[in-house]
Length: 169
Image 1 (cartoon, rainbow, N blue to C red):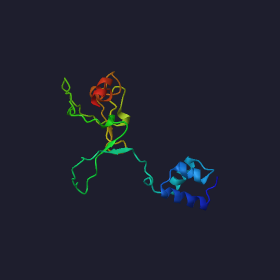
Image 2 (cartoon, rainbow, N blue to C red):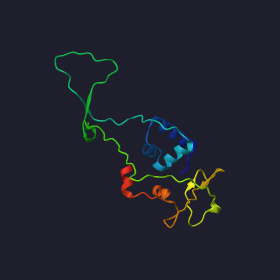
Image 3 (tube, one colour):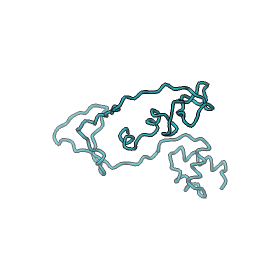
Image 4 (spheres, one colour):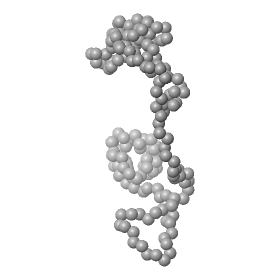
């Protein structure tokens, strides 16, 4: 399928009118919905709102029978939606405040030894400090022991128990 100048102009016109990619593909014939979407992106056509928006079924609330009231200019009549209303439930309860747990033991942040990559050994902490592309990039360098690649402090940051991660969300 070739995109001739005529077909491209038709695509632009139909896209501006708000037709969907499927509708445009059907009118052009011999082209898929994805081909239309691809061409729209390559042409960098602006995204547009739908010309024909889907109408939702709504009922107007009945007005009071014998009273004539004037409502302010900028207000709309109240409407009641038909269909699933489970999402419209209003809750009167207050939201639960977040509680932050303080550690039971004192946490001491170690002073970084600021080692470079070539200075690291099997027993030094390999926690990176800063941006690797900057001049002052370094590693923690404190004693990691046999626990893994990090010192005790950085191990607590890197390896949090699953239950605590869920609680922090």
